[in-house]
Image (cartoon, rainbow, N blue to C red; front, side, top):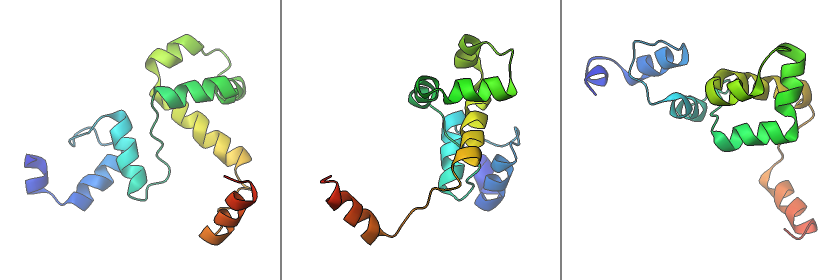
Amino acid sequence: MEYLKEHKVSEWIKRLDNNDMFVPRLGPKSDEDFLKEHGFFGHVPVDRHTKRFLFRTGILHWYLKKNEKNADVLKIFEEDYEVFKRAIIEFCKTFGDNIKIGKKEKIKACRESRNI
């Protein structure tokens, strides 16, 4: 709190976005979630559920095969938070171009047609 008494919140957010290690931090997942919610969409919060999803769907294997051929998956699960972030971002850049988010009316009509 002392830091925020002396600096602007907007300055702290910008420094947090630039991965400045000399500003107060919330924790890896919380930092990413906070920044994403404040419009910095290059940030992805990763938790154990996200890690398992990326592993089970093959997205992690796809990413590692493409970018980090000699990586040990078990070590990545235990240590490397950044690999999961890069895998999600790369997957979305590669396969997410055709995804459109429609208006609420269209989404509602889609749900009704599927009886959701």
